[in-house]
Length: 158
Image 1 (cartoon, rainbow, N blue to C red):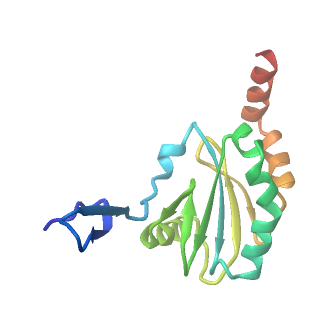
Image 2 (tube, rainbow, N blue to C red; image 1 turned 90 degrees about the vertical axis):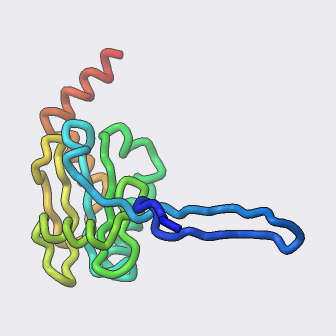
């Protein structure tokens, strides 16, 4: 039996009283192409050794309210958490270990290091931190950008 490459595992369920079969397909972790976000979204990418790293946990705590509010959506901000070990996430989906490693290389993040990087809609790096920062600080950086100022003026006119 061939399994479509977009799926990592295939589970087969059946009953003892009949011949009912159910296939459950689990999607593979996502590969990342940052070009798909260009001109559409800003990116907040947090790199840490693992989700258990104290800096990663503090960063998550500092951003937990922001992620439940409309602040991210208003600023077209997509978040990524990239770990050396463990489950990395990007744009609400799990990303592959290969994609996580590729991001660490692209943004020159050394092994064992914590970094938080803001990428603008133009694809350029706008801010880099070596320790956790508040969402309010990052929102301030974004709100000072010329493109964001234009967006806010357009929203006021509506």
